[in-house]
Image 1 (cartoon, rainbow, N blue to C red):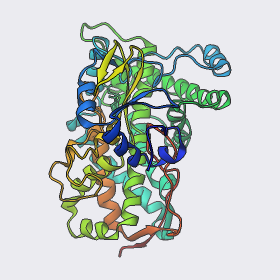
Image 2 (image 1 turned 180 degrees about the vertical axis):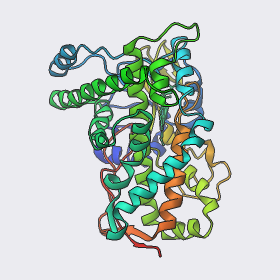
Image 3 (image 1 turned 135 degrees about the vertical axis):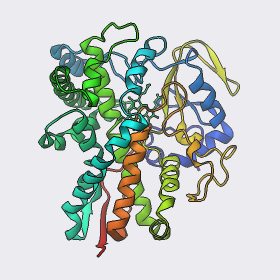
Image 4 (image 1 turned 60 degrees about the horizontal axis):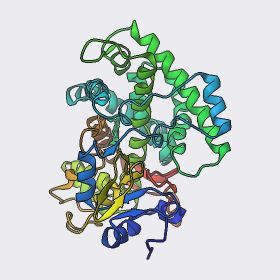
Length: 410
Ligand code: HEM
């Protein structure tokens, strides 16, 4: 059992934070992590309150969108002439309102419904690529490629460029990890700069191109008063959507397949009644969220759960913990297909920044699972003696590798 002296910087806790969350919810619901120095809010009610209070807990900070670096990385950014701008996830009202209008116009339910055939075609062609081998490296051969294909298509990028993106987008997550070395930071920066240049070129090409794609909207949508966004703002939003739309869904797909491997009973239940896939998706989102927290900064001196939080303290709204809070959820740690309030998790956030890609993510997850279960039988781990391990990331949850075996269904 962990104690309040333990830290999310401990790789063991970062790989599996759920017992630590439970202890904090009971004993220290607003707790300064002794190594990382951020305050973690772990009860659902406190996460809700903070997510709705953007005056006290602002989103703009140097944590999610790094703007200053250790010397090696700083030199790379300076030479590249890129000054990252706070837009969607790292901006606050009133600036956020205009960015949000653009964000909401990208992947609403109607637009996502139009993408359904493309999603199904992609799922089927990825499965075609490995089905005859009876095995695959699920992360590399499926999960990493499905959301990337959809987003790259929406960005009108050539298909042959897709394989490079996971390498680049991993850097966006890596650079947010507290305590990384100067070398790691420089290496992540190098990749992010390449991604930035690449996306900027897509954006400029799209401005004069055909309407009807996300990249065209990002290149041409203006503020409410009609004034255009700057190119740096557009490039920043293009990158935020690209990164936000990739890793998050990749990791949910990988967690889903891992759960199916470990729970053949659930595989059977879903094949018997595909109508349960919707509940499966909500339950995996609740229990294994690829985004574990919303990052904020106290904009004023404040207090939560009797604990004083000084102005400028980074505050972690732990949605991963709120999703298992026993004050709200019945039997919170169990995976239950019959849960009736499953959609009330905070995996897509809560409040004004709630995820603009949630309709797309849900549709990708549901289509992928339905078709995988239709075409593959007896999905299992390639090496049952070796459970894939989650990466030691305090704010994210992801698997580097899940190798599976299966029988091809007739
Ligand atoms: C299962 C997959 C996904 C998860 C778990 C997820 C999670 C989240 C969370 C927790 C937030 C709120 C952040 C905050 O309040 O600080 C968020 C916002 C956001 N997400 Fe997602 N997301 C997913 C998929 C996507 C997709 C597919 C896209 C785009 C295609 C996307 C784009 C964004 C953007 C641009 C924001 C910022 C919205 C704003 O600040 O107004 N996400 N997401």
